[in-house]
Structures are given as C-alpha cells and as structure tokens.
Amino acid sequence: MATDNQQNLISKNKEYASTFNQGHLALPPAKKYVVVTCMDARIDTARAFGIDLGDAHVIRNAGGNPDLRSILISQHLLGTREIILVKHTGCGMLTFTNADALKLVTQNAGAGILSSTFDFQPFADLEQAVKDNVAWLKEQSALVDRTNISGWVYEVETGKAKQIV
Ligand SMILES: [Zn+2]
Image 1: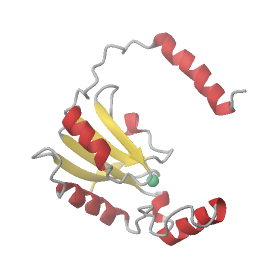
Image 2: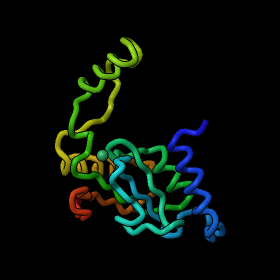
Image 3: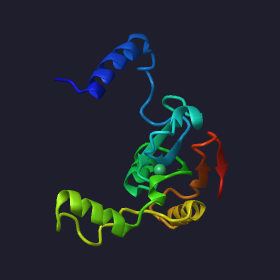
C-alpha cells in the first residue's frame, strides 16, 4: 500500500517523465561548481539559485554544513572547481544545542543509543557559521588548489540571497 507521499511520487513522476528530454546530460556538472546548502524544505535550489539540470552538484544536509566526502568526490572525480555554501535565515540548526538534541533522541530512542559526544553541528550565529564553514573549507588541503569558495545567506522570508564572504 503506497503512502500518500509515494503515491504523489508515482503520479508526478509519470507526468514528469512523459515530457522528459534531458537524458543526454553528462555526469560531470557542466558549470563545474557545487552548492552546499540546508535540507530545509523552503529552499528551491534550482529556481532560487539559478541551477539548471546538469549544471552543478547540490549537497544538502541539516544546516548546509560542509560535507567533505561529497565535496571531494565532486572535485576529484567529477571535476568541480568552485564551492558556493548557502545557509539560511530561520534555520532549525539555530534553535537547539547539542545537549538539547541529545536529550530528545535519548527520550525517543533510549539512553545509550547515541554517544554523549555525538555532534549535531548546531550553530548559534548564522553569518558567523557561514564564515566558519568557509574558513574551514579553505584549510582543507585535500581540496583542489585554487578552489573558489564563497559563503552566502538565503532569506526564506524574501527569497533573496546575499554574499557574506
Ligand atoms: Zn536549515
């Protein structure tokens, strides 16, 4: 029995595939860049950031924190040479501490399931977190030399993106 979300996927995908004509796109992103951003449901990365199909990698996770594994694959195996990191206003990661999250998981899943040092990577200051992430990326010697790295904040209230660093 399909869930409502599975049923939605089935019907919308049928519609999508009926006019799909971009099966010829190459695996490496044509514009050689990667966008790292939050998994927040309010961010339409393709439209808000102008990313056409096949142009860029988009790495999403809670907070838009840099995921070195995916970035290294993007650069060394698939040829990207620029990183655009975008955090956003109203991010859930601004609303809790590691202790809060650990307590919640412990209540729901049971004590001892997660290590007491598990890092959910929350942050308290949005623009500072963007700067910290970009600085951290610039220290990663495994990245391709002369990678262009920039940090941005996207406003979920206005749809506007502004560069921080
Ligand atoms: Zn977020």
